[in-house]
Image (cartoon, rainbow, N blue to C red; front, top):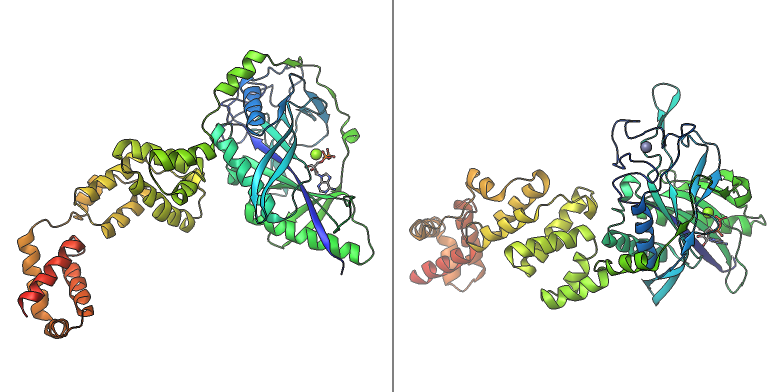
Length: 479
Ligand code: ADP
Ligand code: MG
Ligand code: ZN
């Protein structure tokens, strides 16, 4: 078999976090009863006219600036005509000729060092509705709630070569957009979805091969598998003397294979023309400057600041800033309790563990900073020990309990009574003469058992450090 190289370019659709839709005042909220977030404009009733949401343009510009793009100062919208039941107007308002951002790029880390992935353009457009295939009745229903939700489409250059590079690019892009606040990028809700264009060519060849496109992928795992599967399929086609056909394919993650959906449409198939119901946009220097000046602190800057301002290790800073939501929780909690390393530990260890266990993304975190700070306070004041604290943290994470009332209700507060503790230690030593003898005979290990027994007797509600000291003292006294 010859040696092949994979060439990948992405078209990423991102739903913007504006309160209202792109051309009407309807809410953009995810979910809701079908067809309750709509009006005559977004359901394409004849005679209605669109009014552009200024915030959409602002978010698109912010995304362009943060990804090194040139902003197209005179830009306009175009009509992309196609018929599909989830698109009631039978056209989508998009941008073909003069997209708002062009010629940018973002830097990713790869196995072979840094690499820039070019961004060909970013354009604004409206989302379509959703078709719901009724599993009981033999019919398809349509929900227009998503119709007219603002999108930006970020088109990369065909610069990626491996699944790892694609994931690194998507993760970087996701973070930039989240930090800017232009999208929540919740992939499970479809706020960020990627179309994967992929071709293969012989190593050393200058010319790109024919590409296929896999649309609407919204999980990193599925994306990695789809890239691997499609790469192998194309190589097989070529090795057996066939030709790859330019087409749209659907990746079926359960079957681990892709299926041809339709032959690829070209721009002319859509009969694009300038949108006559919207005037072109002239973006002023002042507005551009204003948006630029409002750019929030992005990830790299935040990471550096955490190291210096909070004095936490680079390793911690990288993990915490790896999701905007985590960084927000970190800063808010530290603002309350002023214990950066402690907060960082809770986020890096227990929070990550529970996210994995509950199969959630950091964006879905509901952890309240005040509650985490209160928990840290309880440990600090010696009211609960770390084992109990872990249990309480899990309750905060999963059931949003209030840590102070929870430990009171469940009787988890540590016993502060040293007399009682001493008594217990003596009782345990009396009950375990063999361990006492072992320890006195030089077996250090025997002490661990006695400490464990005492903790058990105290139902975990004692300070393990203190118990350690007390057990050692009691043992020495029996020498
Ligand atoms: P269209 O407008 O027809 O969808 P574009 O040229 O705009 O096509 O490219 C769409 C996406 O496909 C871009 O992300 C681009 O990087 C990628 N792409 C283009 N040619 C190839 C190729 N031969 N192999 C892989 N990706 C490609
Ligand atoms: Mg395209
Ligand atoms: Zn509407």
